Amino acid sequence: MRSLVLSVAATLAFAGASVAQTTEVLRHSASGVTQKKAAVTPAAKSAVHKTAAAARTQQTAVKQGVVKQAAIKRPVTPQSLRGSRYGGFAPAPAVPDEPPPPLDLTSPRSLSLLNVNSSETLTLTYWSDGAYHRDALDKLNQFLRDSQSGDRTEMDPLVFDVLWHTMQQTGYGGTVEVLSAFRSPEHNAWLASVSRGVARDSQHMNGNALDVRFPGMPVFKIRQAARSLQMGGVGFYPRSGFVHLDTGPVRYW
Image (cartoon, rainbow, N blue to C red; front, side):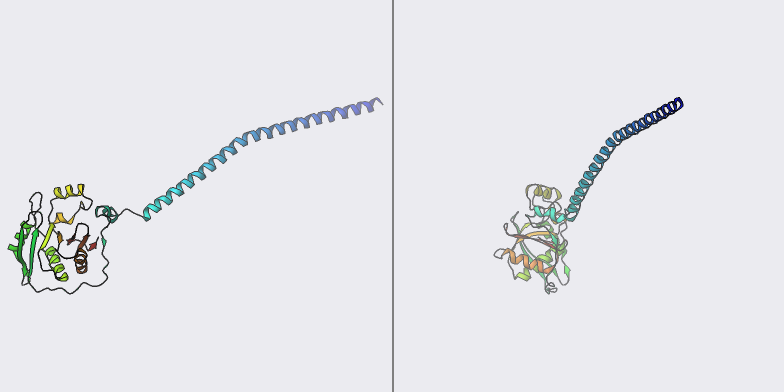
C-alpha cells in the first residue's frame, strides 16, 4: 500500500514536471512568436511603404517620360521660331504644285527701279547676250546700298533675274519700288529688335534679297508669279503691300 502511494506520488510529480516543462515550452514558443511578430511587423510595414514609394516614383517617371516624348513629337524648329517674326507665317520648304513656267533666257534684261528710302531712280540693262554687265552691276550695288549706314555689298546678280522673271510672269513693265535691299548686320539687328517681321538671319545681309512693290499690281499676283519660278524664297506681306524675294532656299511664307 505504501509502495502504491509512493508510485502514484512519483507519477503525479513526473506529470507535474512534464506539464510545467510543456507549459514553459509553450510560453517560450508563444513568447517567441510574439517577439517574431513584433520583429516582422515593422519590417513588413516598411517594405510596403518602400514598395508604394517605388510605385509612385515609377509612375512619376512614366509621366515625365510621356511629357518628354510629347515634347519630342512637337520639337521647336527654326520654322516655328521664325513664325512669330514673320507675323505667323513660318518659312517652310516649298512643295511645288507644278513645274516652273518656261522662261525667256535670251532677251536683254532691263530694270527700272525706285529706291523708296533715298528717292533715287535707276534704269539700266544689266544682262544681255548671255552675260551680266559689270558696270550695271556696280550701279545696282550702289543703288541698293544699306539705307542706314550707306554700306554696300556685291549683290547676287541672280536676285535681279528673280525680279525680272517675276515682272515677265505678271506682265508688269513699270518702275519697281524697292523698300529694302542690302542691310548691314548692325542695321538688320536693330530692325529685328523693333519689328517682328524681320529675321535676325535675314537674307538681306547676304545681298541676295529685295523687298519690292509693283505699283498698281495686286500683291498676291506678284507673290504667285514669284513662287511659280521656284528660284528662291518668297515672303508675302499683304498688310505692308510688298513681296520679299531672295535667292536662298526655295521656301514660302
